[in-house]
Image (cartoon, rainbow, N blue to C red):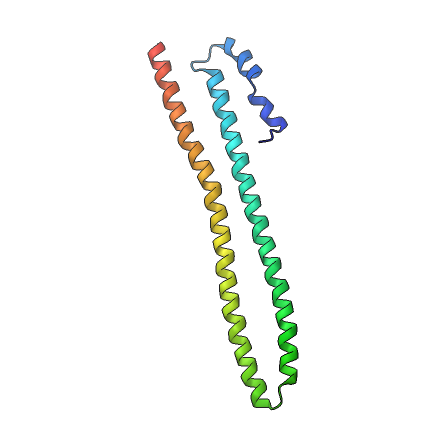
Length: 145
């Protein structure tokens, strides 16, 4: 994973320089933990962006298909002969369009839900690991005292 300038704040040199200040905890461990937190946030954000891009691409595909279908259907309606046939065909088309719209909305909802779930899993795993790290650090500090 690519790191940005902000991540340099969490590098080993900074932690090494801070050890002389007498913090009541392991500064290197703390900095490592914060670095992992930032990496998890970055990964979750990347997953969310990829999910958003997938949704936008799918919506574009749906719109293109809708325009193509509408053009074809307009031509079909114009070729129908009697007004009754045109009304019947329009009702059939409206039903098809409605059903497709519902299916497409459901698909978009599922894409968004999956994207959110993937990003949340990354954050949840990191939060659990971070809490375990805090617990371990507190145990070390208590034993050292």
